[in-house]
Amino acid sequence: MNEHIEEYCAKYIESKHNPQFAILIKGEWGCGKTYFINKLISKYTKKTEKIQSNQIVYVSLFGISSTSEIDKRLFQKMHPVLSSEEFRFIAGFIRTIINSSINIGTAGTVILDEFKPSLQGTKRSDLEKKVIIIDDIERTDLSISQIFGYFSEYLNQLNMKLIFVGNEEKILEKGETNYREIKEKTIGVEFTLEPEIENAIESFTKELFENDEDNIKQTCLEVVSILECKNLRTVRQCLYNLKIFYNALSEEIIKNYGNDLSKIFINLFVQKSLNKISEEDPVMDIIVGFEKYKMSYTKYKEKKKEKEYWVSNYSKEIPLYSIWTNLIFNGDYSKQKIDTVYKQVIKARNQESTTKQKNLFVLIGNWRFMSKKEFKALIDIVNNEFTDGHYIHPGEILHYTNIMMLFCEWKLIEGEKNAIFAKIKKQINSFKERIIPITDWGVLALAYGGWAYSDEVTEVKEMLEYIKKISNENLNIVLKVEIKKDIKKINDDLYTFCEDIRHVDGTNKYYRKPYLSWVDIDDFVNVLVNLPIDNQSLIISSFEERYGITYANGTLYDEYKADKENLIKLIELYDNSLGDVRYNPPELLKRDISKRLHALLEYFN
Image (cartoon, rainbow, N blue to C red; front, side):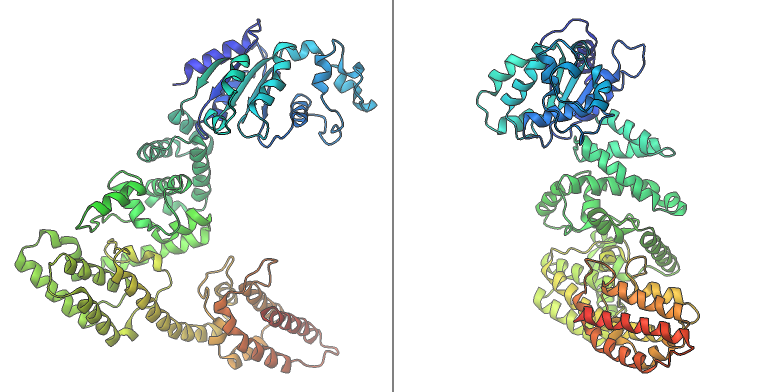
């Protein structure tokens, strides 16, 4: 695609004759200009070449605000062995050569004696052989007239060859009225670079993926084609992060889901980088839009609005569904978290495989194809099952609410939405203590049957908040019982106990839950004080990490402030257990633990 540009640049670089004009290579940000330049320079690595890579000087003007800074950058590139800090006082050293035909060491520039031999070899004739590639000409505080004016000395007096690289649209946005006139005096040939997507992806995958290079390449090509992504920088960043993600996956996960995971990752990462999706957008819809309809989420949302009777019938499993938002938007590549979610998925799948599909999901999957008689009969069955409390998982309740609201809106069933919704809430109250408590609300769209409920339905949003409240109440009851069991088992499995308390490198079992406020402090202290000192210290360290005192920028979440009352009781009981330290080293060490507990209380205050 850009072969003619590469061929021309090569002839320009290798020519024995100086054309006395510069080349301009233009293109949008991310189109692969730097990739093109690196590829061009890489040709000149052998001594047999007409020009060697050390005769090609690459300099970026990014962040440059004065011509003296260009001097410094060029100096660093031409003399990389010399420290830029030590040579800050050398201003315009090339300018010295331009105005003189002798070596830099005798041209009147002040140079430390020990560095004279290194610079003595820099002659005017040496510079005439060099090619300077000036990148990012639009990313500087200097005007384009200052840039071209600066380098015109190199072009006209030193007969150096210059290749400028930049985004011309951004230059024009600066509003320099004489830009084209200035450009004509300096630039002899200009090219617009087209993104070499396939070549770049091939190069990136070859560099990053040794064993799965072809699969990743084909997947990436498919995704960027559908999303119309031409930004090579975005693609490079995506594949780099995909490699980090792959390193966090077990061999079993890669074997079972490798291709699907790489496609989902590239899809989400690219759309995030192109600002087509945000953290609030439903992952299910983003993936369905891409996988089923082959379009970006932006287009998918518009199509969805156009369809009056919209219910996604996408039933393919989305692997590791609950991790994606946190992974893509927060960069959480935790191997432990991924493994935990994977085990939960396998466990749920095994459980589902041993049970018959519930009537609710038979209805959701097949209502379009039912006769009036079949549809009415199944609606009655599902309604009766819901009333009898057969659907106690929050996901099932949300799916039921969603489909009933849609059927009501489409006049497929009798009644008004408000009345039906009120009836559903009343029925839930009759069995609310049996509703299964959950903590990961992100997986609900795929918790059963692979169907997505619509969070655009007002009643579904309201039901979600209502069910969350009930689930949290039930979860609190369950966790209190669980905590009591955990404390009894501290001696048997101390490290699991500590991991459950911690956030970083922990299980997050009690994340943002007021753990200490649910603890029977008397029981806990009785166990704690009888543990070896090292184990006591380990437990206190886990609480310090949980509440954030371990970190300079630690955060005490609002949910944890309820723990303060029991923390005070814990300190009182622990201090009451302290004994005489004479001839008793453990008692001395316990005082240090007491100090840490008091410091934790101060942190709360």
